Image (cartoon, rainbow, N blue to C red; front, side, top):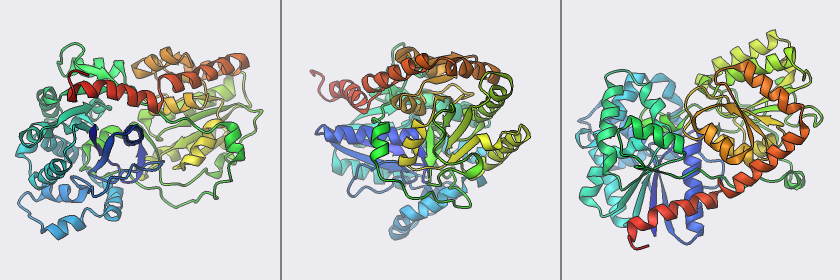
Length: 479
């Protein structure tokens, strides 16, 4: 099959949806399919090699879309339009998202869902022309927030369209009125235009089916997959990575002109590469001391503040006063105040030197960090559609402790690799860590279960095979 995947980029930090789409594209390509991975809004930021797509521009480039939204009658000459889609320029522009308002996000999201009436006709025509030339059998839209373009695409192209969910509810619910209600209504009207709807978990499929008033079983489940991580032995034999850099400021999230990227930002990883900070020692930790690990963006929605509170309780009140905490993942300029507040909280508890902070690390550093964890937790405070970070922990053989509910319950039931606790309860989280750290045999069993589940259910190959099982009947109904 000829498959095109249109995925919103972030420009500066790793996001789970981008990494999922790239992994799927590479696996499909390796299996002999013709695959194009098409960035939208901003360049893709990946922690592995991107599937090359010759001649593909960045569609709906963030700067051009921003200008067209603010100045609808503006008609830029072609050379200037192309210049503003320059990758370096877009990455630079992505650093200014903190200057935009919730109203900007709402206006943009609604215009993309009503694209026929939007000022983005030039951008839409560029996408249509490219797809007409490449003639894919399947077009995958990386997020449901792209559903507004389906009707226009159908008027010009003979292509089957698959639309993915990836956490749109939290983005839409965060919009001010009237945009919140208008966007939900428009999404409800547009999604039936797709040939297939897919969700990374049954939990999220059911949630969105109810909120969008879709028929039962209208959304198929396609779990995300990850590539196997290097083993401890492979890491020991690998050459030492270069010393980490310590830039003054980390990169920031994308322009507000990318509501789809905003929706996927909750499923993110680390941006540009800074390495571990010195607050809690070096990247490697004493193997005899247990390490509580966290690897996600350092924001309240991911529960990093609950993590810190739970760690303080573990150290002060429970049976493991020798435990350490390692917090790794993305930190943008907008996240720095929270991180500073958490560091002050740890300092007040006398635990500054018991915590390692690793913002914005490379893939190689990430693998080393994961293998240094004893237990893994990202106590997210919102209903997570999937949580790719959880599967990465399973692949590394790290037992997990997560809030009960959302996709976490589904993944832990499938993998038998962790524990569930009451959401938003740091003391319950600390007590679960304490119990597991006192049971080395149970830690070993859960870690083994996690590796097996990652290989059997959450591998890139399993994701590819499930995708093909869903997509092939669209192209060949007799298959």
